[in-house]
Amino acid sequence: MDSIKQAVELARAADAPGQSAIAPEVVRPGSVDPAIRKAQLSPAHLERSRIVAQGSATPQGRYYDMLRTQILQEMDKKSWQFLAITSPTAGCGKTVTACNLAISIARLAERSVLLVDLDLRRPTVANYLGVQGTGGVMSVLEGRASLSSAVMQVNVGPTNFLVLPGTVSSSSSSEWMASQTMGTLLQTIKREFRSRIVIFDLPPMLLGDDVISILPRMDATLLVAGVGATTVADVKECQKHLQRSPVIRVVVNKAQETPDSYYGYY
Ligand SMILES: Nc1ncnc2c1ncn2[C@@H]1O[C@H](COP(=O)(O)OP(=O)(O)O)[C@@H](O)[C@H]1O
Ligand SMILES: [Mg+2]
Image (cartoon, rainbow, N blue to C red):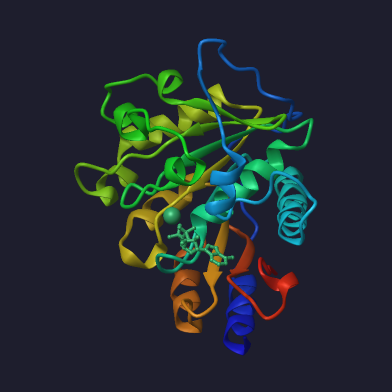
């Protein structure tokens, strides 16, 4: 754990004030197009995917609620809307964290969420949630579908949020991330879903330049470090690229010293 703690300190040191492109506004529940595709999520499937934030009855659910509250406090202070979730390498738990945070935030009556799968290398949000993919984000980027037709509403108990599922990129993820088309899509999301917190499940940082390309378009970053997977050197390397997007939190995932640290975070 020492190396992880050191890693967390390093990432904290990287925290720098940032500017938001959006004007301050009161966040209110987002209204949705009545024609939007809807899906009911299966609690058993979610649990198998380690998505546990549907309620605060379990320690894991409570951890996500605490993480959510800390993140929202930081984001509200700066009127931030876009939260990037990344990690140094694959398999650290970005997607599990992104889905849990989306549900935890959506459970708040006055909040609404859009979860976007931008891991064009390995999109798994739809699988984890147990929904059938639409054309997803690539169909929007390639001009084959409108944003409103690619977004779906998912319901879990009384909670609902919007998802823009991912699809594997036919060409290089890096090129898409840096493209003007992606810039336009993000601007459209900002405008169309202005009242929502938008969570982006990104690829790992150190496997290519795709995350580095898109970070300047994000308001803040949550870095997921995986116990046994992330080294101090990895976090140092990420830190170099995180200058323009403040690191809002470092989640230390897969810590299993005690049942309560199962979803430990700092
Ligand atoms: N806190 C955790 N404890 C144990 N396993 C976890 C935890 N978080 C994620 N996992 C598992 O680790 C694997 C990778 O998680 P995932 O969220 O897909 O990582 P990433 O999106 O960073 O590649 C999955 O099999 C997931 O179920
Ligand atoms: Mg993932």
